[in-house]
Length: 387
Picture 1 (cartoon, rainbow, N blue to C red):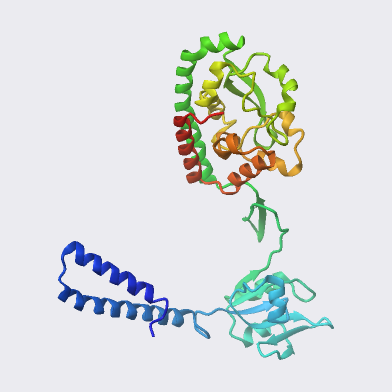
Picture 2: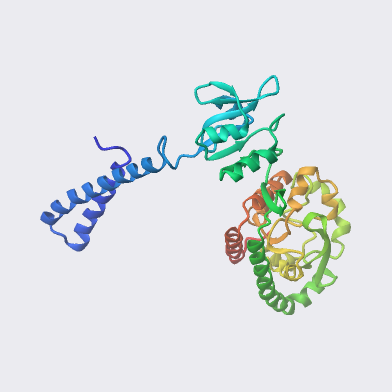
Protein backbone atom coordinates (compact mmCIF):
# COMPACT_ATOMS: atom_id res chain seq x y z
CA UNK A 1 0.00 0.00 0.00
CA UNK A 2 1.31 3.46 -0.93
CA UNK A 3 1.60 5.76 2.09
CA UNK A 4 -0.53 8.89 2.31
CA UNK A 5 2.57 11.11 2.25
CA UNK A 6 3.60 9.70 -1.18
CA UNK A 7 0.17 9.79 -2.82
CA UNK A 8 0.01 13.61 -3.25
CA UNK A 9 3.38 13.59 -4.99
CA UNK A 10 2.27 10.85 -7.38
CA UNK A 11 -0.89 12.75 -8.23
CA UNK A 12 1.15 15.92 -8.78
CA UNK A 13 3.61 14.19 -11.10
CA UNK A 14 0.83 12.45 -12.99
CA UNK A 15 -1.04 15.70 -13.52
CA UNK A 16 2.14 17.48 -14.63
CA UNK A 17 2.92 14.79 -17.18
CA UNK A 18 -0.61 14.93 -18.56
CA UNK A 19 -0.24 18.71 -18.91
CA UNK A 20 3.04 18.15 -20.77
CA UNK A 21 1.22 15.78 -23.10
CA UNK A 22 -1.33 18.40 -24.09
CA UNK A 23 1.07 21.35 -24.25
CA UNK A 24 4.15 19.76 -25.83
CA UNK A 25 2.44 17.08 -27.88
CA UNK A 26 4.10 14.10 -26.19
CA UNK A 27 2.82 10.83 -27.64
CA UNK A 28 0.75 8.49 -25.44
CA UNK A 29 3.21 5.64 -26.07
CA UNK A 30 6.07 7.71 -24.65
CA UNK A 31 3.91 8.82 -21.73
CA UNK A 32 3.12 5.21 -20.84
CA UNK A 33 6.84 4.64 -20.32
CA UNK A 34 7.66 7.94 -18.59
CA UNK A 35 4.80 7.87 -16.06
CA UNK A 36 5.70 4.58 -14.27
CA UNK A 37 9.36 5.60 -14.16
CA UNK A 38 8.49 8.96 -12.61
CA UNK A 39 6.25 7.35 -10.00
CA UNK A 40 8.89 4.77 -9.10
CA UNK A 41 11.59 7.44 -8.87
CA UNK A 42 9.48 9.60 -6.57
CA UNK A 43 8.62 6.65 -4.32
CA UNK A 44 12.28 5.64 -4.09
CA UNK A 45 13.40 9.19 -3.21
CA UNK A 46 10.71 9.45 -0.51
CA UNK A 47 11.79 6.16 1.04
CA UNK A 48 15.45 7.19 0.94
CA UNK A 49 14.61 10.51 2.61
CA UNK A 50 12.80 8.71 5.45
CA UNK A 51 15.72 6.30 5.94
CA UNK A 52 18.21 9.17 6.12
CA UNK A 53 16.03 11.06 8.60
CA UNK A 54 15.72 7.97 10.81
CA UNK A 55 19.47 7.30 10.56
CA UNK A 56 20.35 10.84 11.65
CA UNK A 57 17.70 11.50 14.28
CA UNK A 58 16.26 8.11 15.18
CA UNK A 59 16.34 6.45 18.56
CA UNK A 60 19.71 5.67 20.21
CA UNK A 61 21.57 7.39 17.37
CA UNK A 62 24.90 9.18 17.42
CA UNK A 63 23.19 12.53 16.73
CA UNK A 64 20.60 12.07 19.47
CA UNK A 65 21.63 14.25 22.41
CA UNK A 66 21.88 12.56 25.82
CA UNK A 67 21.03 14.99 28.61
CA UNK A 68 21.76 14.98 32.32
CA UNK A 69 18.92 16.85 34.03
CA UNK A 70 20.04 18.76 37.13
CA UNK A 71 17.41 19.84 39.63
CA UNK A 72 14.61 17.42 38.68
CA UNK A 73 14.16 13.86 39.97
CA UNK A 74 12.09 12.29 37.15
CA UNK A 75 10.78 12.84 33.67
CA UNK A 76 7.39 13.77 35.10
CA UNK A 77 9.04 16.31 37.39
CA UNK A 78 10.99 17.67 34.43
CA UNK A 79 7.81 18.07 32.36
CA UNK A 80 6.13 19.83 35.27
CA UNK A 81 8.99 22.34 35.35
CA UNK A 82 9.65 23.05 31.68
CA UNK A 83 6.87 21.26 29.79
CA UNK A 84 7.56 18.53 27.25
CA UNK A 85 9.98 20.65 25.22
CA UNK A 86 12.98 18.87 26.70
CA UNK A 87 16.39 19.35 25.14
CA UNK A 88 17.76 15.97 24.21
CA UNK A 89 16.94 12.56 25.69
CA UNK A 90 17.17 12.47 29.50
CA UNK A 91 19.53 9.68 30.59
CA UNK A 92 19.64 10.63 34.25
CA UNK A 93 18.58 13.09 36.92
CA UNK A 94 20.79 14.71 39.54
CA UNK A 95 18.89 16.23 42.45
CA UNK A 96 19.04 16.95 46.17
CA UNK A 97 17.40 14.29 48.34
CA UNK A 98 15.31 14.84 51.44
CA UNK A 99 18.37 14.56 53.69
CA UNK A 100 20.35 17.11 51.64
CA UNK A 101 22.65 14.70 49.80
CA UNK A 102 22.96 14.59 46.01
CA UNK A 103 21.25 11.64 44.33
CA UNK A 104 21.42 10.32 40.79
CA UNK A 105 18.44 8.53 39.24
CA UNK A 106 18.88 6.66 35.97
CA UNK A 107 16.29 5.99 33.28
CA UNK A 108 15.11 2.83 35.06
CA UNK A 109 14.39 4.70 38.28
CA UNK A 110 17.38 3.41 40.24
CA UNK A 111 18.68 5.95 42.74
CA UNK A 112 22.18 6.21 44.19
CA UNK A 113 24.31 8.85 45.90
CA UNK A 114 26.46 10.67 43.34
CA UNK A 115 28.30 13.88 42.69
CA UNK A 116 28.10 15.78 39.44
CA UNK A 117 31.60 14.70 38.45
CA UNK A 118 30.76 11.05 39.08
CA UNK A 119 27.59 11.30 36.99
CA UNK A 120 29.38 12.96 34.11
CA UNK A 121 32.22 10.44 34.13
CA UNK A 122 30.05 7.33 34.47
CA UNK A 123 27.53 7.99 31.69
CA UNK A 124 27.43 9.05 28.06
CA UNK A 125 26.21 12.64 28.37
CA UNK A 126 26.14 15.39 25.74
CA UNK A 127 24.13 18.12 27.47
CA UNK A 128 23.76 19.24 31.07
CA UNK A 129 20.40 20.94 31.58
CA UNK A 130 19.91 22.79 34.87
CA UNK A 131 16.23 23.34 35.63
CA UNK A 132 16.35 24.27 39.33
CA UNK A 133 18.68 25.64 41.98
CA UNK A 134 18.80 23.92 45.34
CA UNK A 135 21.23 23.00 48.09
CA UNK A 136 24.32 21.28 46.75
CA UNK A 137 23.69 22.39 43.16
CA UNK A 138 25.90 25.40 42.53
CA UNK A 139 25.50 26.80 38.98
CA UNK A 140 29.14 27.91 38.80
CA UNK A 141 30.41 24.44 39.73
CA UNK A 142 28.03 22.75 37.31
CA UNK A 143 29.04 25.06 34.46
CA UNK A 144 32.73 24.51 35.23
CA UNK A 145 32.45 20.72 35.42
CA UNK A 146 30.45 20.64 32.19
CA UNK A 147 32.63 22.99 30.16
CA UNK A 148 35.97 21.38 31.00
CA UNK A 149 34.55 18.05 29.78
CA UNK A 150 33.20 19.61 26.58
CA UNK A 151 29.55 19.21 27.53
CA UNK A 152 26.89 21.71 26.47
CA UNK A 153 25.51 23.51 29.51
CA UNK A 154 21.96 24.83 29.48
CA UNK A 155 20.09 26.53 32.27
CA UNK A 156 16.42 27.31 32.65
CA UNK A 157 15.58 31.00 33.07
CA UNK A 158 12.19 31.89 34.47
CA UNK A 159 10.64 35.26 33.67
CA UNK A 160 7.21 36.78 34.31
CA UNK A 161 4.63 35.96 31.67
CA UNK A 162 4.01 39.25 29.87
CA UNK A 163 0.70 39.93 28.08
CA UNK A 164 2.55 41.06 24.94
CA UNK A 165 6.02 41.57 23.53
CA UNK A 166 9.14 39.45 23.44
CA UNK A 167 12.27 38.76 25.49
CA UNK A 168 15.82 39.40 24.30
CA UNK A 169 19.18 38.71 25.92
CA UNK A 170 22.35 40.72 25.56
CA UNK A 171 25.78 39.48 26.64
CA UNK A 172 27.53 41.96 28.94
CA UNK A 173 30.66 39.88 29.51
CA UNK A 174 32.08 38.18 32.61
CA UNK A 175 29.15 35.74 32.60
CA UNK A 176 26.54 38.48 32.87
CA UNK A 177 23.55 38.85 30.57
CA UNK A 178 20.95 41.57 30.33
CA UNK A 179 17.44 40.23 29.85
CA UNK A 180 15.07 42.69 28.24
CA UNK A 181 11.35 42.47 27.67
CA UNK A 182 10.47 44.47 24.60
CA UNK A 183 6.88 45.41 23.90
CA UNK A 184 7.84 47.41 20.79
CA UNK A 185 10.15 46.65 17.83
CA UNK A 186 13.80 47.43 18.62
CA UNK A 187 15.71 45.76 15.77
CA UNK A 188 18.20 48.39 14.69
CA UNK A 189 18.42 47.68 10.95
CA UNK A 190 14.64 47.52 10.25
CA UNK A 191 14.08 50.67 12.34
CA UNK A 192 16.89 52.43 10.44
CA UNK A 193 15.21 51.48 7.16
CA UNK A 194 11.90 52.81 8.52
CA UNK A 195 13.61 56.09 9.43
CA UNK A 196 15.09 56.41 5.93
CA UNK A 197 11.64 55.74 4.47
CA UNK A 198 10.24 58.50 6.69
CA UNK A 199 12.88 60.99 5.51
CA UNK A 200 12.45 60.13 1.84
CA UNK A 201 8.67 60.15 2.08
CA UNK A 202 8.69 63.45 3.99
CA UNK A 203 10.78 65.18 1.32
CA UNK A 204 8.43 64.01 -1.42
CA UNK A 205 5.35 64.86 0.65
CA UNK A 206 6.56 68.39 1.38
CA UNK A 207 6.79 69.07 -2.36
CA UNK A 208 3.08 68.25 -2.69
CA UNK A 209 2.41 70.25 0.46
CA UNK A 210 4.01 73.33 -1.10
CA UNK A 211 1.91 72.91 -4.25
CA UNK A 212 -1.26 72.52 -2.18
CA UNK A 213 -0.38 75.64 -0.20
CA UNK A 214 -0.09 77.72 -3.35
CA UNK A 215 -3.38 76.37 -4.71
CA UNK A 216 -5.56 76.46 -1.58
CA UNK A 217 -4.01 78.99 0.85
CA UNK A 218 -6.09 82.01 -0.15
CA UNK A 219 -9.42 80.17 -0.03
CA UNK A 220 -8.56 78.46 3.28
CA UNK A 221 -7.85 81.83 4.84
CA UNK A 222 -11.05 83.31 3.46
CA UNK A 223 -13.34 80.47 4.61
CA UNK A 224 -11.84 79.82 8.05
CA UNK A 225 -10.95 83.41 8.99
CA UNK A 226 -7.72 82.05 10.43
CA UNK A 227 -4.19 81.00 9.48
CA UNK A 228 -3.68 78.55 6.62
CA UNK A 229 -1.73 76.08 8.79
CA UNK A 230 -3.43 74.75 11.91
CA UNK A 231 -1.13 73.71 14.75
CA UNK A 232 -2.05 71.64 17.78
CA UNK A 233 -0.14 69.98 20.62
CA UNK A 234 -0.19 66.20 20.32
CA UNK A 235 1.36 63.37 22.32
CA UNK A 236 4.08 61.33 20.62
CA UNK A 237 6.19 58.33 21.56
CA UNK A 238 6.02 57.53 25.27
CA UNK A 239 4.44 60.88 26.15
CA UNK A 240 6.70 63.26 24.21
CA UNK A 241 4.80 66.41 23.28
CA UNK A 242 5.11 67.91 19.81
CA UNK A 243 3.27 70.39 17.61
CA UNK A 244 1.29 68.75 14.81
CA UNK A 245 0.59 70.72 11.63
CA UNK A 246 -2.36 70.44 9.24
CA UNK A 247 -4.10 72.60 6.69
CA UNK A 248 -6.92 74.38 8.52
CA UNK A 249 -10.25 72.79 7.60
CA UNK A 250 -12.45 74.22 10.40
CA UNK A 251 -13.56 77.65 11.45
CA UNK A 252 -11.11 79.51 13.64
CA UNK A 253 -13.55 79.18 16.57
CA UNK A 254 -13.66 75.36 16.28
CA UNK A 255 -11.96 74.67 19.62
CA UNK A 256 -14.42 76.89 21.50
CA UNK A 257 -17.40 75.22 19.80
CA UNK A 258 -16.13 71.72 20.59
CA UNK A 259 -17.62 71.76 24.10
CA UNK A 260 -21.07 72.39 22.64
CA UNK A 261 -20.76 69.38 20.34
CA UNK A 262 -19.60 66.78 22.88
CA UNK A 263 -23.09 65.32 23.14
CA UNK A 264 -23.00 64.56 19.40
CA UNK A 265 -19.75 62.59 19.67
CA UNK A 266 -20.08 59.41 17.59
CA UNK A 267 -17.17 57.67 19.30
CA UNK A 268 -17.30 55.76 22.55
CA UNK A 269 -14.38 56.47 24.86
CA UNK A 270 -11.50 58.92 24.91
CA UNK A 271 -11.75 60.21 21.36
CA UNK A 272 -13.95 62.79 19.65
CA UNK A 273 -15.34 62.50 16.11
CA UNK A 274 -18.47 63.69 14.31
CA UNK A 275 -18.89 62.53 10.72
CA UNK A 276 -20.81 65.66 9.65
CA UNK A 277 -19.03 68.16 11.87
CA UNK A 278 -20.64 71.59 11.38
CA UNK A 279 -17.34 73.33 12.11
CA UNK A 280 -15.76 72.04 8.88
CA UNK A 281 -15.76 74.48 5.95
CA UNK A 282 -16.85 73.50 2.42
CA UNK A 283 -13.26 73.47 1.18
CA UNK A 284 -12.24 71.68 4.36
CA UNK A 285 -14.51 68.74 3.50
CA UNK A 286 -12.84 68.42 0.11
CA UNK A 287 -9.36 68.62 1.63
CA UNK A 288 -10.24 65.95 4.18
CA UNK A 289 -11.81 63.68 1.59
CA UNK A 290 -8.60 63.75 -0.45
CA UNK A 291 -6.33 63.74 2.67
CA UNK A 292 -4.77 66.99 1.47
CA UNK A 293 -5.20 68.47 4.95
CA UNK A 294 -2.63 65.94 6.24
CA UNK A 295 0.18 67.09 3.95
CA UNK A 296 1.85 69.51 6.46
CA UNK A 297 2.42 66.51 8.75
CA UNK A 298 5.28 65.53 6.46
CA UNK A 299 7.19 68.30 8.26
CA UNK A 300 6.60 66.41 11.52
CA UNK A 301 7.95 63.27 9.83
CA UNK A 302 11.03 65.15 8.61
CA UNK A 303 11.67 66.41 12.16
CA UNK A 304 11.42 62.86 13.53
CA UNK A 305 8.29 63.58 15.58
CA UNK A 306 6.09 61.34 13.45
CA UNK A 307 6.50 58.47 11.01
CA UNK A 308 4.89 57.81 7.65
CA UNK A 309 3.09 54.86 9.25
CA UNK A 310 2.23 54.53 12.91
CA UNK A 311 -0.49 54.99 15.47
CA UNK A 312 -2.96 57.86 15.68
CA UNK A 313 -1.46 60.85 17.60
CA UNK A 314 -3.77 61.78 20.51
CA UNK A 315 -4.19 65.12 22.24
CA UNK A 316 -3.00 65.68 25.83
CA UNK A 317 -6.61 65.90 27.02
CA UNK A 318 -7.33 62.45 25.59
CA UNK A 319 -4.19 60.95 27.15
CA UNK A 320 -5.14 62.41 30.54
CA UNK A 321 -8.15 60.06 30.56
CA UNK A 322 -6.19 56.96 29.51
CA UNK A 323 -6.15 53.76 31.52
CA UNK A 324 -2.78 51.99 31.83
CA UNK A 325 -3.31 49.60 28.90
CA UNK A 326 -4.22 52.52 26.62
CA UNK A 327 -0.73 53.97 27.00
CA UNK A 328 0.79 51.11 25.05
CA UNK A 329 -0.39 52.75 21.84
CA UNK A 330 2.05 55.56 22.66
CA UNK A 331 5.06 53.23 22.63
CA UNK A 332 5.79 53.86 18.92
CA UNK A 333 5.95 57.07 16.93
CA UNK A 334 2.56 58.25 15.70
CA UNK A 335 2.04 58.06 11.96
CA UNK A 336 0.58 60.14 9.17
CA UNK A 337 -1.29 56.98 8.18
CA UNK A 338 -1.87 53.61 9.81
CA UNK A 339 -4.44 50.94 10.47
CA UNK A 340 -6.68 53.53 12.12
CA UNK A 341 -6.67 55.68 8.98
CA UNK A 342 -7.46 52.64 6.80
CA UNK A 343 -10.21 51.09 8.92
CA UNK A 344 -11.04 53.31 11.84
CA UNK A 345 -12.42 56.39 10.10
CA UNK A 346 -15.35 54.42 8.69
CA UNK A 347 -15.89 51.32 10.78
CA UNK A 348 -14.63 51.89 14.33
CA UNK A 349 -16.83 53.69 16.84
CA UNK A 350 -15.25 52.47 20.10
CA UNK A 351 -11.96 53.81 21.43
CA UNK A 352 -11.03 50.31 22.65
CA UNK A 353 -11.11 49.20 19.01
CA UNK A 354 -8.77 52.06 18.12
CA UNK A 355 -6.37 50.84 20.82
CA UNK A 356 -6.69 47.29 19.47
CA UNK A 357 -5.80 48.46 15.95
CA UNK A 358 -2.78 50.41 17.20
CA UNK A 359 -1.53 47.53 19.36
CA UNK A 360 -2.01 45.12 16.46
CA UNK A 361 0.19 47.37 14.34
CA UNK A 362 2.87 47.45 17.06
CA UNK A 363 2.82 43.68 17.61
CA UNK A 364 3.00 42.80 13.90
CA UNK A 365 5.19 45.65 12.70
CA UNK A 366 7.53 45.08 9.78
CA UNK A 367 8.86 47.09 6.85
CA UNK A 368 6.66 45.03 4.54
CA UNK A 369 3.59 45.89 6.60
CA UNK A 370 4.44 49.60 6.42
CA UNK A 371 4.74 49.34 2.63
CA UNK A 372 1.36 47.61 2.42
CA UNK A 373 -0.29 50.31 4.54
CA UNK A 374 1.27 53.09 2.45
CA UNK A 375 0.09 51.41 -0.76
CA UNK A 376 -3.44 50.94 0.55
CA UNK A 377 -3.48 54.54 1.78
CA UNK A 378 -2.57 55.76 -1.71
CA UNK A 379 -5.43 53.70 -3.15
CA UNK A 380 -7.78 55.21 -0.57
CA UNK A 381 -6.61 58.71 -1.44
CA UNK A 382 -7.17 57.99 -5.14
CA UNK A 383 -10.73 56.93 -4.34
CA UNK A 384 -11.31 59.99 -2.17
CA UNK A 385 -12.02 57.92 0.91
CA UNK A 386 -11.18 60.52 3.54
CA UNK A 387 -13.34 61.60 6.46
